[in-house]
Image (cartoon, rainbow, N blue to C red; front, side, top):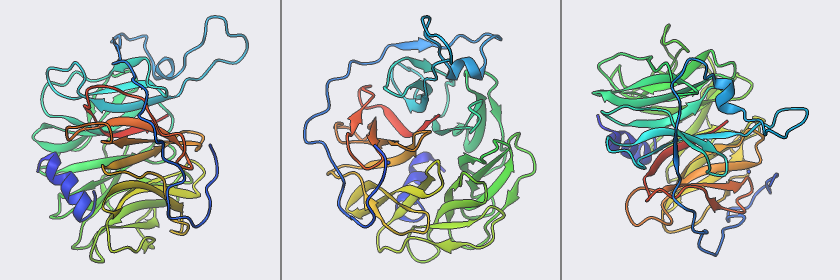
Length: 341
Protein backbone atom coordinates (compact mmCIF):
# COMPACT_ATOMS: atom_id res chain seq x y z
CA UNK A 1 0.00 0.00 0.00
CA UNK A 2 1.35 3.38 -0.89
CA UNK A 3 0.93 6.69 0.96
CA UNK A 4 -1.83 7.91 -1.37
CA UNK A 5 -3.96 4.89 -0.43
CA UNK A 6 -3.26 5.38 3.27
CA UNK A 7 -4.19 9.06 3.21
CA UNK A 8 -7.14 8.60 0.87
CA UNK A 9 -8.50 5.91 3.13
CA UNK A 10 -7.99 8.19 6.10
CA UNK A 11 -9.96 10.99 4.41
CA UNK A 12 -12.89 8.93 3.16
CA UNK A 13 -13.08 6.05 5.60
CA UNK A 14 -10.84 6.28 8.65
CA UNK A 15 -8.82 9.32 7.85
CA UNK A 16 -8.08 11.17 6.31
CA UNK A 17 -5.70 27.36 20.52
CA UNK A 18 -3.74 33.48 22.16
CA UNK A 19 -5.60 31.27 24.85
CA UNK A 20 -9.19 30.25 25.41
CA UNK A 21 -12.02 29.14 23.20
CA UNK A 22 -15.65 30.14 23.18
CA UNK A 23 -17.99 27.33 23.85
CA UNK A 24 -20.41 26.77 21.00
CA UNK A 25 -19.47 28.73 17.84
CA UNK A 26 -19.33 26.80 14.60
CA UNK A 27 -17.84 29.69 12.61
CA UNK A 28 -14.08 30.31 12.47
CA UNK A 29 -12.83 32.68 15.16
CA UNK A 30 -10.59 34.57 12.78
CA UNK A 31 -9.19 34.14 9.32
CA UNK A 32 -6.69 36.62 7.87
CA UNK A 33 -7.84 38.59 4.86
CA UNK A 34 -4.42 39.59 3.64
CA UNK A 35 -1.94 37.44 1.74
CA UNK A 36 0.79 36.12 4.06
CA UNK A 37 4.05 38.07 3.86
CA UNK A 38 6.65 36.88 1.42
CA UNK A 39 8.91 34.69 3.51
CA UNK A 40 12.31 34.08 1.93
CA UNK A 41 13.12 30.50 1.10
CA UNK A 42 14.93 28.99 4.04
CA UNK A 43 18.63 28.32 4.16
CA UNK A 44 19.18 24.72 5.14
CA UNK A 45 21.73 24.10 7.88
CA UNK A 46 23.07 20.57 7.83
CA UNK A 47 23.06 18.95 11.25
CA UNK A 48 26.56 17.78 12.24
CA UNK A 49 26.60 14.01 12.70
CA UNK A 50 28.96 13.90 15.65
CA UNK A 51 28.89 12.00 18.89
CA UNK A 52 28.84 15.11 21.04
CA UNK A 53 25.49 16.28 19.63
CA UNK A 54 22.69 15.36 22.02
CA UNK A 55 18.96 15.83 21.97
CA UNK A 56 19.34 18.48 24.64
CA UNK A 57 21.64 20.59 22.46
CA UNK A 58 19.25 20.12 19.55
CA UNK A 59 16.33 21.48 21.54
CA UNK A 60 17.99 24.13 23.67
CA UNK A 61 19.87 27.21 22.55
CA UNK A 62 21.42 29.76 24.88
CA UNK A 63 22.10 33.28 23.74
CA UNK A 64 25.73 34.23 24.39
CA UNK A 65 24.69 37.27 26.39
CA UNK A 66 22.06 35.40 28.39
CA UNK A 67 22.32 35.54 32.15
CA UNK A 68 20.59 33.08 34.43
CA UNK A 69 18.25 30.41 33.04
CA UNK A 70 18.85 29.10 29.48
CA UNK A 71 16.57 30.35 26.75
CA UNK A 72 14.53 27.42 25.41
CA UNK A 73 13.67 27.69 21.74
CA UNK A 74 10.87 25.29 20.91
CA UNK A 75 11.28 23.30 17.73
CA UNK A 76 9.05 22.09 14.93
CA UNK A 77 9.70 18.85 13.10
CA UNK A 78 8.23 18.32 9.62
CA UNK A 79 8.80 16.82 6.17
CA UNK A 80 9.97 18.95 3.24
CA UNK A 81 11.21 18.38 -0.30
CA UNK A 82 13.31 21.56 -0.29
CA UNK A 83 16.70 21.08 -1.99
CA UNK A 84 16.45 17.30 -1.73
CA UNK A 85 17.17 15.49 -4.99
CA UNK A 86 16.32 12.14 -3.42
CA UNK A 87 12.87 13.16 -2.25
CA UNK A 88 11.30 14.69 0.88
CA UNK A 89 13.35 14.52 4.07
CA UNK A 90 12.80 15.34 7.73
CA UNK A 91 13.76 18.73 9.16
CA UNK A 92 13.53 20.70 12.38
CA UNK A 93 13.15 24.47 12.60
CA UNK A 94 12.48 27.14 15.20
CA UNK A 95 8.81 27.81 15.80
CA UNK A 96 9.03 30.95 13.61
CA UNK A 97 10.32 28.90 10.66
CA UNK A 98 13.99 29.89 10.98
CA UNK A 99 17.11 27.76 11.48
CA UNK A 100 16.29 24.68 9.43
CA UNK A 101 18.26 21.55 10.24
CA UNK A 102 18.01 18.41 8.16
CA UNK A 103 17.70 15.17 10.11
CA UNK A 104 17.39 12.37 7.54
CA UNK A 105 19.45 11.36 4.53
CA UNK A 106 17.32 8.50 3.21
CA UNK A 107 17.37 8.06 -0.55
CA UNK A 108 14.46 5.67 -1.04
CA UNK A 109 10.84 5.97 -0.04
CA UNK A 110 9.53 8.94 1.88
CA UNK A 111 9.18 9.88 5.53
CA UNK A 112 5.76 10.85 6.88
CA UNK A 113 4.19 12.28 10.04
CA UNK A 114 7.10 12.74 12.48
CA UNK A 115 6.22 12.94 16.17
CA UNK A 116 8.44 14.16 19.03
CA UNK A 117 8.72 12.01 22.11
CA UNK A 118 7.44 13.96 25.14
CA UNK A 119 10.94 14.01 26.66
CA UNK A 120 12.23 15.63 23.44
CA UNK A 121 14.91 13.01 22.88
CA UNK A 122 13.53 11.09 19.91
CA UNK A 123 11.26 11.39 16.88
CA UNK A 124 9.04 8.58 15.59
CA UNK A 125 7.83 8.52 11.99
CA UNK A 126 6.78 6.07 9.30
CA UNK A 127 8.37 5.48 5.90
CA UNK A 128 8.17 3.11 2.94
CA UNK A 129 11.92 2.93 2.35
CA UNK A 130 11.65 -0.85 2.83
CA UNK A 131 8.62 -1.38 0.61
CA UNK A 132 5.84 -1.46 3.19
CA UNK A 133 5.14 1.43 5.55
CA UNK A 134 7.09 0.78 8.74
CA UNK A 135 7.70 2.81 11.88
CA UNK A 136 11.16 4.17 12.63
CA UNK A 137 12.70 6.23 15.40
CA UNK A 138 15.67 8.61 15.36
CA UNK A 139 17.39 10.72 17.99
CA UNK A 140 16.49 14.41 17.99
CA UNK A 141 19.81 15.29 16.32
CA UNK A 142 19.13 12.95 13.40
CA UNK A 143 21.41 10.14 14.55
CA UNK A 144 20.65 6.53 15.50
CA UNK A 145 17.85 5.76 13.03
CA UNK A 146 16.19 2.50 14.10
CA UNK A 147 13.40 0.47 12.54
CA UNK A 148 10.74 -0.49 15.10
CA UNK A 149 8.24 -2.57 13.10
CA UNK A 150 8.99 -5.34 10.64
CA UNK A 151 5.92 -6.95 9.10
CA UNK A 152 4.65 -7.68 5.60
CA UNK A 153 2.01 -5.00 6.19
CA UNK A 154 1.68 -1.25 6.63
CA UNK A 155 2.40 0.24 10.08
CA UNK A 156 1.70 3.97 10.37
CA UNK A 157 0.76 7.04 12.46
CA UNK A 158 2.96 6.51 15.56
CA UNK A 159 2.22 8.53 18.71
CA UNK A 160 4.07 8.49 22.05
CA UNK A 161 2.83 7.78 25.54
CA UNK A 162 3.36 10.74 27.93
CA UNK A 163 6.30 8.99 29.62
CA UNK A 164 8.00 8.34 26.23
CA UNK A 165 8.16 4.63 27.00
CA UNK A 166 5.54 3.34 24.56
CA UNK A 167 4.26 4.09 21.07
CA UNK A 168 0.71 3.60 19.86
CA UNK A 169 0.19 3.14 16.11
CA UNK A 170 -2.11 1.72 13.45
CA UNK A 171 -1.42 -1.35 11.34
CA UNK A 172 -3.22 -3.52 8.80
CA UNK A 173 -1.14 -6.59 9.65
CA UNK A 174 -4.28 -8.54 10.59
CA UNK A 175 -6.32 -7.61 7.51
CA UNK A 176 -7.63 -4.10 8.25
CA UNK A 177 -6.32 -1.04 10.08
CA UNK A 178 -6.41 -1.48 13.85
CA UNK A 179 -4.69 0.17 16.84
CA UNK A 180 -1.60 -1.42 18.39
CA UNK A 181 0.87 -0.43 21.09
CA UNK A 182 4.53 -1.33 21.60
CA UNK A 183 7.47 -0.43 23.77
CA UNK A 184 9.59 2.47 22.49
CA UNK A 185 12.24 0.00 21.30
CA UNK A 186 9.66 -1.87 19.17
CA UNK A 187 9.22 -4.82 21.51
CA UNK A 188 5.98 -6.27 22.90
CA UNK A 189 3.59 -5.23 20.13
CA UNK A 190 0.00 -5.67 21.37
CA UNK A 191 -3.30 -5.12 19.55
CA UNK A 192 -5.76 -2.76 21.31
CA UNK A 193 -8.77 -2.70 18.94
CA UNK A 194 -10.31 -5.71 17.28
CA UNK A 195 -13.12 -5.29 14.76
CA UNK A 196 -13.80 -5.64 11.05
CA UNK A 197 -13.68 -1.87 10.41
CA UNK A 198 -10.74 0.54 10.20
CA UNK A 199 -9.26 2.22 13.28
CA UNK A 200 -6.29 4.56 12.80
CA UNK A 201 -4.40 7.75 13.73
CA UNK A 202 -4.23 7.19 17.51
CA UNK A 203 -3.06 9.87 19.96
CA UNK A 204 -2.33 9.45 23.68
CA UNK A 205 -3.85 11.84 26.23
CA UNK A 206 -1.36 13.81 28.36
CA UNK A 207 -2.36 11.94 31.52
CA UNK A 208 -1.72 8.59 29.80
CA UNK A 209 -5.17 7.22 30.59
CA UNK A 210 -6.89 7.59 27.22
CA UNK A 211 -6.23 7.25 23.51
CA UNK A 212 -8.16 9.18 20.85
CA UNK A 213 -8.41 7.65 17.39
CA UNK A 214 -10.54 7.62 14.26
CA UNK A 215 -12.78 4.81 13.07
CA UNK A 216 -15.33 4.13 10.35
CA UNK A 217 -17.18 1.50 12.38
CA UNK A 218 -20.41 3.53 12.44
CA UNK A 219 -20.57 4.30 8.73
CA UNK A 220 -18.09 7.12 8.20
CA UNK A 221 -14.86 8.23 9.82
CA UNK A 222 -15.49 9.71 13.28
CA UNK A 223 -13.39 10.31 16.40
CA UNK A 224 -13.45 7.92 19.33
CA UNK A 225 -11.76 7.79 22.73
CA UNK A 226 -10.81 4.65 24.64
CA UNK A 227 -8.89 3.72 27.77
CA UNK A 228 -5.20 3.15 27.15
CA UNK A 229 -5.70 -0.61 27.46
CA UNK A 230 -8.27 -0.59 24.62
CA UNK A 231 -11.39 -0.77 26.80
CA UNK A 232 -14.30 1.70 27.00
CA UNK A 233 -14.32 2.70 23.34
CA UNK A 234 -16.64 5.71 22.99
CA UNK A 235 -17.61 7.78 19.97
CA UNK A 236 -17.32 11.57 20.59
CA UNK A 237 -18.15 13.06 17.15
CA UNK A 238 -21.30 12.41 15.16
CA UNK A 239 -21.46 14.08 11.75
CA UNK A 240 -22.43 12.87 8.28
CA UNK A 241 -19.00 14.07 7.09
CA UNK A 242 -15.51 12.86 7.93
CA UNK A 243 -13.85 13.77 11.28
CA UNK A 244 -10.28 12.51 11.54
CA UNK A 245 -6.79 12.93 12.97
CA UNK A 246 -7.40 13.82 16.65
CA UNK A 247 -4.63 15.40 18.78
CA UNK A 248 -4.90 16.24 22.50
CA UNK A 249 -4.12 19.67 23.91
CA UNK A 250 -1.27 19.69 26.47
CA UNK A 251 -3.73 20.14 29.36
CA UNK A 252 -5.88 17.25 28.14
CA UNK A 253 -9.05 19.34 28.03
CA UNK A 254 -9.41 19.73 24.27
CA UNK A 255 -8.87 17.82 21.06
CA UNK A 256 -7.94 19.36 17.72
CA UNK A 257 -8.91 17.49 14.57
CA UNK A 258 -9.73 17.91 10.90
CA UNK A 259 -13.14 17.64 9.22
CA UNK A 260 -14.58 18.05 5.74
CA UNK A 261 -17.90 19.19 7.18
CA UNK A 262 -17.78 22.29 4.96
CA UNK A 263 -16.55 20.58 1.80
CA UNK A 264 -12.75 20.70 2.06
CA UNK A 265 -10.81 19.80 5.19
CA UNK A 266 -10.61 22.44 7.95
CA UNK A 267 -9.10 22.47 11.46
CA UNK A 268 -11.50 22.23 14.38
CA UNK A 269 -11.23 21.95 18.15
CA UNK A 270 -13.61 20.56 20.75
CA UNK A 271 -13.62 19.57 24.39
CA UNK A 272 -12.44 16.06 25.15
CA UNK A 273 -16.04 14.87 25.47
CA UNK A 274 -16.88 16.07 21.96
CA UNK A 275 -18.75 19.22 23.00
CA UNK A 276 -18.19 22.84 21.85
CA UNK A 277 -17.09 21.89 18.37
CA UNK A 278 -15.45 25.01 16.85
CA UNK A 279 -14.00 25.58 13.38
CA UNK A 280 -10.70 27.49 13.33
CA UNK A 281 -9.83 27.70 9.64
CA UNK A 282 -11.84 28.52 6.54
CA UNK A 283 -11.00 28.47 2.87
CA UNK A 284 -11.38 26.82 -0.49
CA UNK A 285 -8.41 24.49 -0.03
CA UNK A 286 -7.47 21.97 2.64
CA UNK A 287 -6.24 22.98 6.09
CA UNK A 288 -5.19 19.82 7.93
CA UNK A 289 -2.99 17.98 10.42
CA UNK A 290 -3.12 20.21 13.53
CA UNK A 291 -0.62 19.92 16.40
CA UNK A 292 -0.47 21.95 19.63
CA UNK A 293 2.36 24.13 20.90
CA UNK A 294 3.88 22.90 24.19
CA UNK A 295 1.93 25.51 26.20
CA UNK A 296 -1.32 24.96 24.30
CA UNK A 297 -1.56 28.59 23.14
CA UNK A 298 -0.97 27.90 19.43
CA UNK A 299 -1.58 25.29 16.77
CA UNK A 300 0.64 24.40 13.83
CA UNK A 301 -1.09 23.03 10.75
CA UNK A 302 -0.67 22.28 7.06
CA UNK A 303 -2.45 24.26 4.35
CA UNK A 304 -2.65 24.38 0.57
CA UNK A 305 -4.08 27.93 0.54
CA UNK A 306 -1.06 29.52 -1.19
CA UNK A 307 -0.03 26.59 -3.37
CA UNK A 308 -1.11 25.89 -6.91
CA UNK A 309 0.18 22.32 -6.79
CA UNK A 310 -1.17 19.53 -4.63
CA UNK A 311 1.34 20.11 -1.82
CA UNK A 312 1.31 22.79 0.85
CA UNK A 313 3.17 24.73 3.52
CA UNK A 314 3.32 24.95 7.32
CA UNK A 315 1.28 27.59 9.17
CA UNK A 316 0.83 28.60 12.82
CA UNK A 317 -2.22 30.18 14.45
CA UNK A 318 -3.40 31.06 17.93
CA UNK A 319 -5.50 28.41 19.61
CA UNK A 320 -8.66 30.46 18.94
CA UNK A 321 -7.95 30.52 15.19
CA UNK A 322 -6.60 34.07 15.03
CA UNK A 323 -3.30 35.26 13.55
CA UNK A 324 -2.84 32.53 10.94
CA UNK A 325 0.74 32.91 9.72
CA UNK A 326 2.72 31.02 7.11
CA UNK A 327 6.12 30.01 8.49
CA UNK A 328 7.63 28.04 5.60
CA UNK A 329 8.11 28.94 1.97
CA UNK A 330 9.58 25.97 0.18
CA UNK A 331 7.97 26.00 -3.23
CA UNK A 332 4.98 24.21 -1.70
CA UNK A 333 6.85 21.03 -0.83
CA UNK A 334 6.27 20.82 2.94
CA UNK A 335 3.91 17.96 3.47
CA UNK A 336 2.31 15.98 6.24
CA UNK A 337 2.09 16.74 9.90
CA UNK A 338 4.38 19.17 11.68
CA UNK A 339 4.87 18.42 15.36
CA UNK A 340 5.89 20.90 18.07
CA UNK A 341 8.23 20.41 21.02
